[in-house]
Image (cartoon, rainbow, N blue to C red):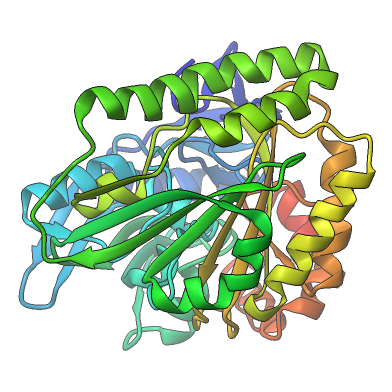
Length: 439
């Protein structure tokens, strides 16, 4: 069980194990020229094209029965521009390698998500985000993009060059071309102090506005079937560095959060009636802790327990009401939910199809252990999220289509018009894009 997707007997599967597909052809180009040639050849053969990262999307956004492009040879840092505060990386570079390489250079991204298995292109194209009062998603930190378009030409864009493409392609869903390189804004590495502590659900809801306003990065996890949450506040710090001691880190982040949690989920899957009792125990297992470290060691943590996930962005001011409705729904239903619900925030950004496009947003993510039936829970949760003008994360399970999405994205038609221009023959089509963008 690696951290990425796999191909066996010609069948590609995603990380969550809920999407599988047999591509007609696979290629792993070692240069942008090779990638462009592969796209042109696929066009001659009338074949659709998709690039895949590590398969961390739970939707079939990367699935194709045509040409599957694997980007693992397109990795590494191309260029560090200290004066401009940017770094240009190849699209197939995993976030983990980017974070480690930047730290070696004394640099860091301002914000990131909570895992770093994904490639930079896969993460940004689907709108991966962490939590932040002032700093937004990974894609919002992009300053320039290079992509191979449907006719095999290489297009570069930024705020100055092809700004209309830049507005959309930072979260392009793989619909506008194959991203080959990304230029990120970076800054001198800094320290974050993380404060993790349990807090009753009702208190977090009552004080959410204050907790959000007072912290640069605030998030919390609510444990269904309980009135308990675990909160996390990350703020910049003058230091000194005080990392989590190695043994305690292993015990809490590996043994409890992965090992014991995995075993608890196996029990819960076999005997669903045990889930509420397990939830009460696990919601109290993690005690308060405070530590100070460089950003990627604070923002990210290992996630070895496999799951499927749905995540929605709602207007930030609608968060508490939405969450209370979700809790009421779980409380009165026969559902048995063994995974905590994750709540994060992001400021409004200017990316066409970003979940935070044009509005301050809060994210609610619901998860189910891999192999347990999730449809009942996700359907009921989605009904609540959609009623609050929710926008689904592009890489996570949802049932929305172009017609309903066009109502929650004011710039939806701007994106589809650009797609018509850049990919008139729908070289980068697949079933998922047909559903969410229309044909």
